[in-house]
Amino acid sequence: MTQDTNDEEVDFFNNRFPDAKFSICLRQDELKEKISDEKQVAIRQTFTCYCHDTKYTGIDRPQPKFFVIKNDNMTVENVLDELIRQNMTADCNHQFLEGFYKHTDAQYELFFGS
Ligand SMILES: [Zn+2]
Image (cartoon, rainbow, N blue to C red; front, side, top):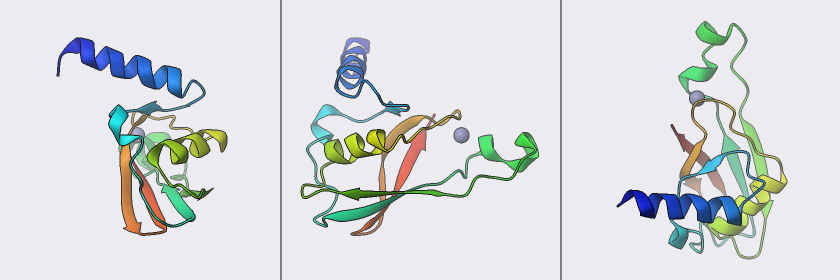
């Protein structure tokens, strides 16, 4: 992948999701993929990375957050829109959303990279 392609993708996601408080590290063609046939899924955000280690922060590691998404068409795009609407943020060094880790058809976990 060339640098130009990367910039184009970044521009695309910035324009498509202007209110996102995290960076989206996916390909455009992944947006239309359905993550589930369910009409409601729970998406968990955990804080297991070193940024939230009590050793460094001096405060307790945050509890996982759950986002309940209801949509008849559970595409990556629709899930992202709903996470943004629910004000999902990624404040640490790991703010690049790289995908969803599937636990069950109705339970997913956000996967962040740096
Ligand atoms: Zn982190």
